[in-house]
Image (cartoon, rainbow, N blue to C red; front, side, top):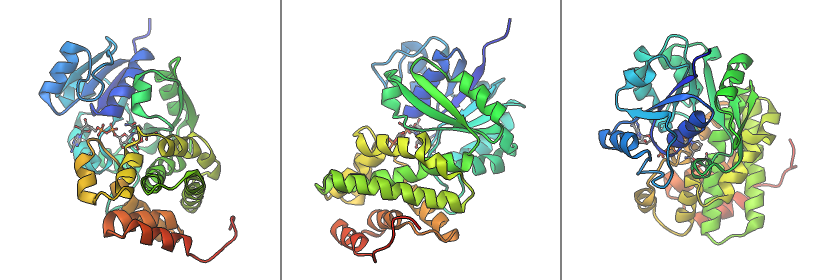
Length: 336
Ligand SMILES: NC(=O)c1ccc[n+]([C@@H]2O[C@H](COP(=O)([O-])OP(=O)(O)OC[C@H]3O[C@@H](n4cnc5c(N)ncnc54)[C@H](O)[C@@H]3O)[C@@H](O)[C@H]2O)c1
Ligand SMILES: O=P(O)(O)OC[C@H](O)CO
């Protein structure tokens, strides 16, 4: 008899918890690591995560701990679901505890500030594991909908296709349909850039602009992601798939998206400080817009929507001025 697959999930926030449910529903034995003892105790005794999904009963094959060594022990998959900008520091502490052959799985959709490194690059550098043991999960996966077991597709990407297939099997459920990919760069960029475009669409929504504006931002945002991906060696077709278009559509349409909501609040006229104060969860695009713009500059890629978001979010440019400048750029062919 084969033993069940073991998964450690580091992060008891919305996506860590919802993805732990997916793994558990797919038959894995899951240990969730969380920072706060009271939340871990509540998960173990109440079978819910009261801070994120109080009305969702967690499967019996999930338990929680504050001890990273206990979570990591014997894990076939070590899933990382903390805010992107905290990964380096956290992983440095967890790296010595990792099971020898574990596959590290990033759920994160950010790019590191300062270094402009993708999360898989940070993992490779800090945990000192080869790229063949680093996978990512991405796609149109709003955590609250997944926790409600609504149907969704996703992408699991790893340069080693066999590892991607093992992860695919470990998280395949009747409501969660993962596709494999070996284009880690494209999948990670798709996830990071869609958050920036989600902010832009939210800002437009908040300003009272309509669906033509939204459709234009989504499409030209996809063009920005694809251009950056091409310059960085990604497969351009990845961007028309779940990691690109799929996630853009979900994020830019949904009030559940934290990035979209953050942008909407800014577009309605809240200051950055007021918007941060009412945002209870991680909106990765707020910091990563700067790292995505840095990546674009390094690779000589034009990303005007991304630059506009940076100007509004980080340099306090008034939204109407930013919009006028974005629309006032010189005319050009759609494809070049
Ligand atoms: N929520 C979603 O719908 C969703 C879906 C797909 C991908 N993601 C990505 O998953 C990642 C995690 O997002 P989330 O939605 O779970 O965020 P979240 O804000 O809901 O949860 C983040 C978790 O990390 C913990 N945390 C915060 N700062 C920390 C630190 N310094 N050290 C350790 N832990 C810390 C929080 O306590 C919380 O448990 C992000 O990169 C996000 O883009 C989220
Ligand atoms: O809530 P957001 O904006 O972080 O988006 C969540 C997911 O990435 C959607 O796929």
